[in-house]
Image 1 (tube, rainbow, N blue to C red):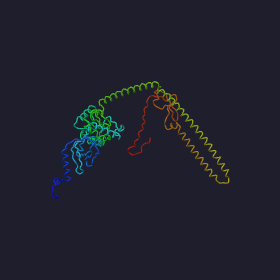
Image 2: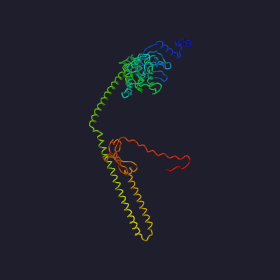
Image 3: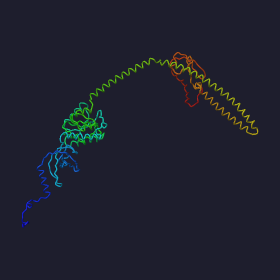
Length: 481
């Protein structure tokens, strides 16, 4: 029999390793053999973790491998990975010991060819278009002449100089520059911050709020223009309350911000031309409008003057119309005076007759009352009442007669006035109607006199009062005569 305990075996010569040692050895082997590789594949299950790291699966038709991109590298990627996107990754192959799975640690990533990049952009364009960000009814009209223009571009490139030069040639305006990077990993976030920053400026503040925004960049490759295709930039442009012009690249370049902007310019210089009109053209237009307006107004005034002159020739002489009216007025005034006098005389006679009748009628009524009530001793009371009633009625009649008499023009003559008539008996109401040498009649309250007009009258001097006799100085009374 063989002693097992003393017989050497092959297993006893193999070094024992822990699981961690094996995992580290595999990790070192993979990183040593695949320290720098480029792998092409399709993105699956991309997961942007809250820690900032990116985890996804890189696969093709026959295999799949895990991929990880650390937080510091994620911020430098030129694109955001989406499901099904075909990319080319550069990095190193390593392993994750806790799961014993190998993975590629991404250092950079790019789309696999221009076709894949264009497909991604087209898919993104359709997605944003379905949300209504590119609808024409969202577009805002540009101001005719903005006072302040905000420009979002690189401060060191030729773009800002071209815009300022073109604005100076056409119509100089106040320009605010928000410097941003227009290429690279951080360009998209800076562009978004610039658009939102301009919109947050309050009107009337220390910094003027722009009336128009221009987002501009020079030409470049499709990869160079990728920041203007980012979804965040497109959404910021669509949400801008300030009208925005997109001027990215050359005329043949098209980015997604062009669809969201209120107006697309083929070049930055063209954006400046769209922003403001030509000042010289406006001045020429104003001068031409002024000249045409003067000509039209002069022609209008000439036509109106000619028409008024023609109408004036067809009108009668106003002085002749007034002469007839004056003559009619004089005649009516004279007839009115005579009629008023006759009316007052007639009314006075009527009042006197009514008074006499009332006196007789009162006595008859009193006698009738006495005969009707012979047994009552109220004769004296009735007589006093009847007399008082007659006295009151007579007083009212007298007051009415006095009022009628006071309305007569003859009472005006009693107060010292006079009525002047010409030789035809027409009243003269103004001094200008009395011509020198004309005969006139002056009626006073007690009669008429004749007179001749010699010219403008002068007030007569009042008669001087006789001097008051002085009393003698010796205190005696003096003589009366």
